[in-house]
Length: 312
Image 1 (cartoon, rainbow, N blue to C red):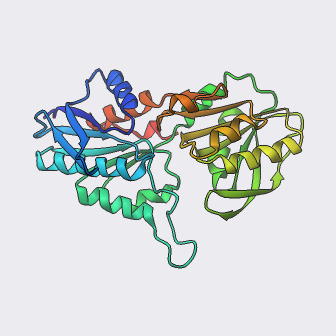
Image 2 (image 1 turned 180 degrees about the vertical axis):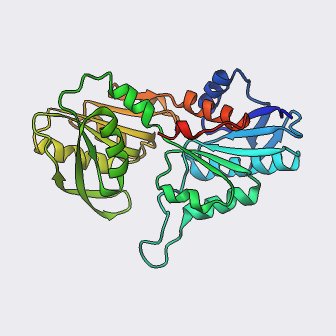
Image 3 (image 1 turned 90 degrees about the vertical axis):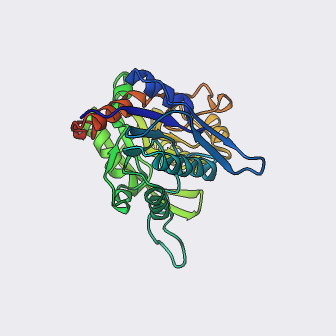
């Protein structure tokens, strides 16, 4: 039996949800997501979703607490409206950086968010470039974990890079950088980084040869751009010919844009998993869309087809 597909979104990234709807030739369902005068989230689904296969598209991006609460309350509203299946589509998973205990008396907030989503009533999760792959194991429901690598690889393949070197800005990003380097037939370099505190990092040493070569720093997110700029400084000192950067999630908080515009970076390539405000879209920032990737995954999940070919 075919169940009707419904797409819903909150206020986090409506433009991406609309792009996904265009890819699927399906309009967004009518839902009111507003605030009471005291700031509490108010949600009302204005059409019938009983028995429907519903996909809620909502990155938990800044303001993280607001977008997360919108998502949780939308899920609760759908569950109480008798939706057959509720899939949370998170192009960006907030609170993902605290995925384990690295020192005493700290939370594992990525697990807490997973528990909240399950308590609200999701039946499955569709995520894009999680900060740590083990977050999938925090859920008891099925998780489809997509990567934006194919989109980034396709773009970089058209850049006419000379003797390209893909650079991991820290040890945690080596696997991601190696996968892209392999597809582009490029060399691999690694920045040995020591973090001194939240949102601060010091690049210590470059492992690999970049002198006179075109380099691309690969990371899953660009927040304050501290890690990125440290990596760029190390590459510049070692004589890299060109320096580009790619980050899937453009958080771009605090001094990020100023740091990028005053650095030797030629270009920063990001996706629209998080909306990039006009004020942050400098000439050096290129935004690629992930709507076709997410839209195709949603279609395959709805049609009960394999999604594994998208896991590249």
